[in-house]
Amino acid sequence: MIDLEIAVQDVAGVRSALEGGATRVELCTALGVGGLTPSMGTVRLAVDAAPAGFVHVLVRNRGGGYVYSDDDVRTMCADIAAVRDSGVGGVVVGALTPDGRIDLAALGRFVDAAGELPVTFHRALDASRDALAELAALEGTGVGRVLTSGGAVRSIHGLEMLADMVRTAPIGVQIMAGGGVRVEDIPALVEAGVAAVHLSARTSYDDPYPAGPGGGAQELDATDPGIVAAARQAMT
Image (tube, rainbow, N blue to C red):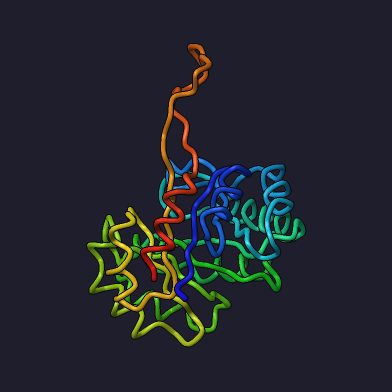
């Protein structure tokens, strides 16, 4: 069966993903900027609320591009070590060089910090100068899965590239389609041969309590177990 991964931002999202039949979650915060490292409190409670291996954690210390300073890399290595010791099922990372290649030096430090944890390379690949060529560079790095839209804004528009990635991925590296995925897109993504599909399955609502002039937007996100269940059904 094709794996279903749901991007969630809180413990309630973990429970909703479980209820809907997800295989695992990518736990993060700030999905509006592509996702950032969640708090350790969130990580620990999420792990407590889920079966072993279910919670994978995005480690990304800031928004923007994927070219990182040494301080950025050191910060993310420290975060990887912290979440590793919390019992998570894996980590999700990525980094590029200024010329658009995978930053193998930074990636090596991330993999070393992860120890025995499974490592996923995230959509930094889609920001690289040649996603297909850079996919090949992951051979022997310790990365076991890649999250990619096939270089498109939405995965459904990257089907040809996704199929090429499935055919040419290094041995032991799974291709997971993600990026603007809607339930109706899933059959075509599965047909492309990917090992997993990733989506946020979220709905938005207004917080009924005021944030005040300094509290930010009133709109909040919640993982919808009905969307998760529909996504799982679309895979069959």
